[in-house]
Amino acid sequence: MKSMNPLAQQLNETLQTESPNVYAMLSTLGKAIYFPKEGILSQSAEAKTKATKFNATIGIATEGGQPMHLKVIQETLSAYNPKDIYEYAPPGGKPELRAAWRSKMIKENPSLETKPFGNPVVTNALTHGLSIVADLFADAGDAVVIPNKNWENYELTFGVRRGAEIVEYPLYNDQMRFNSAGLREALLAQKDKGKAIVVLNFPNNPTGYTPGPQEGEEIIAAIRDAAEAGINVVAVTDDAYFGLFFEDSLHESLFAKLADLHPRVLAVKVDGATKEEYVWGFRVGFITYASSSAAALTALEQKTLGIIRATISSGPHPSQTFVLRALTSPDFEAQKAEKYDIMKRRANRVKALLDSGRYGDVWGYYPFNSGYFMCLKLSDVSAEAVRVHLLNQYGIGTIALGKTDLRVAFSCIEEENLEELFDTIFKAVNELNQ
Image 1 (cartoon, one colour):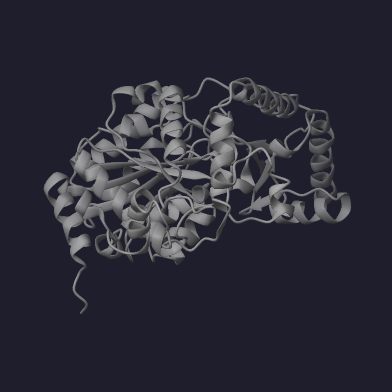
Image 2 (cartoon, rainbow, N blue to C red):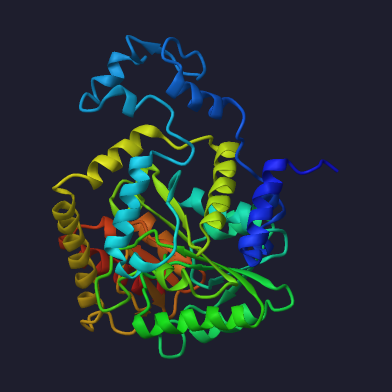
């Protein structure tokens, strides 16, 4: 068996000393991974500061003191300095962007101001952040606890890639509020394993639901109960749609409450500009850890950089530069508020239509108050049949989930077209019911 790299061993010893429960959460890969201190990256970084005459270290081409580039590309990006576009970004991301995102996190989550958490590491959007969590913490058979209405990619990321066991609980209870009792039960069922990964995705994809403040306290209590029962909990907030809260729900990420909850709880925040800033194709996300130990945070960051180095090496530089420019623009807040208002009006219009009584009892809908989506619960016809009929007869695309649920993304439908959309869905359901 190959012996463990001394750098990995050093990081592990730090975690064993500073946060033994977090060390116990690591997967086999998580224990083995490290970020090289000697090699091309470190030697290039050293040369960048000391090689004042010639720097022949890094695998880029230069010309005239700038990164070499093609005019046909640069002419479309003339607002940007070539060094902020063409060079490799550091594996952890642009330092200025990481600092700006951390400041943004505190501004939007005031509870974080006094909490111990690290510097966000740039990921290639949220899926990549979640896959880092899976690589670092999920081994075959480990439990990943998620609600039964979830983003299907969790199965690929944690289940197929890492062999973890997906444990589902009903998202809603009988009062159609968040089922914190179900979460608690699913977590406590992992007592024999002594470990669980829980993913909290609010606003929820596919339902567009975010719990209220009281529900949030119940979620935190459920995770605390699991920790006090001796279960090490990796608590991941998948905050893909953060900020798009249209009603009286939680308006802060649960990451803040999880950050110093219990020694057996490791809070991990996965978020990004993807949905929040409407830059889906930029693929700029972040992963952030919470710990009262600065040494433990450094160790987790080094292991994260090791995963990044071993998979994508580093994220795209241009999109990081674009996002940084947006975050530091004086117009950013106003422009974002304008888009938020558009999204909120669409959500409110959908709710008004569904509550109008015009659609009878052919469907109900799951509570929604945030995000991009909502889900209809069809009464007497299969969601897949409706999806296919809408597509073939009316040129309308929706997503069928299970037997009864039809996901509708109001985010991509103009407000004035929402009535026609739901009227047509209603028509399609009735045609299939005949």
